[in-house]
Image (cartoon, rainbow, N blue to C red; front, side):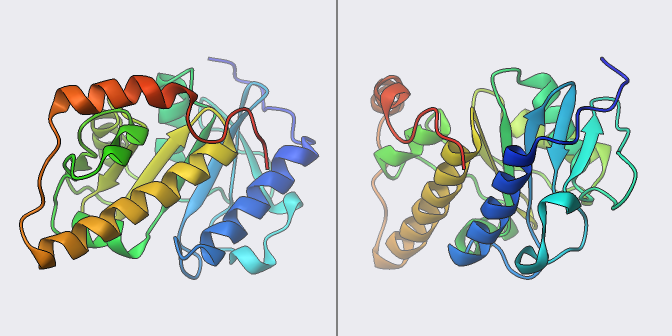
Length: 222
């Protein structure tokens, strides 16, 4: 992998990350300083910094990193930079990673539960389940490895006792997916109170996955 720092003057990408972090708050997907986002950039990636509230975040606060884990001088990168880096390295088709702690996703993560095919919209995550990765401490190699396994052939997962991850080809579609997964978890939580949710067959979800290749926002940037 390259060892030189990526160009850090990508103003559009930096502004997009700031806007997306504020969207996480506005959409109810994150609270306080929780949540972090990254996008692929030049020879590495840009990631939100550690501990800065979205409402005061500025483009110059965004941290440029290499795929070897070197950060540009200045603010510290998000404590979760490792799984951002590892996802972008392992999945070359992915250009954006959104991590957040939305209420319903996190509630199922607290229970260590996968989300089954209770609605066809689960196909937006790439298959008939949204897997929940086992627990590991935040920011660790162990958590990164577990997240990568849960994301195999998927574009979203839960992290036990933690939150969720959504990934995608661009920032707009990845943020859209995060919203859809939280909505799905909310609907599933309510359905469990109403009765016994009926699961769709795997074959139906795989057919929907194919149909979804042309669904949702495409080739859009914040």
